Amino acid sequence: QVQLVESGGGSVQTGGSLRLSCAVSGLTFSSYAMGWFRQAPGKERESVAAINWSGAGTYYADSVKGRFTISRDNAKNTGYLQMNSLKPEDTAVYYCAARSGYNSYVNYRREEYAYWGRGTQVTVSS
Image (cartoon, rainbow, N blue to C red; front, top):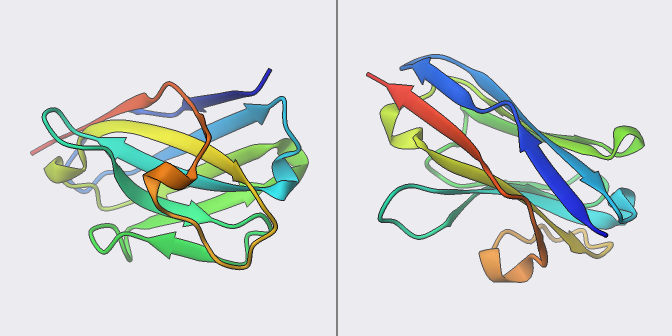
């Protein structure tokens, strides 16, 4: 059974930092791309960052470039999202997702991902 479990969410003030983790089980993580998505109340789920199977390729939404860093540790079956300089508009439920494939291309669209976690809340106050 495939499971993705996010952790590390919480409440911070503007300018603060959080590090999200995504623990993956039930699949060969090293052959899967991983993405982070977020959904704010009343809005559609949007892509935040993605990383290919090897970690050599990454994607960032324009809204988070220079502030967020995606990474992965294939030996630990875990992905990460380091979030710095947080803003109130970053407030959302954050989801990690996985899709199979040894692509150099970085898949970042929501519909490209088959496996999803349940999400972790991030709240940034001004």
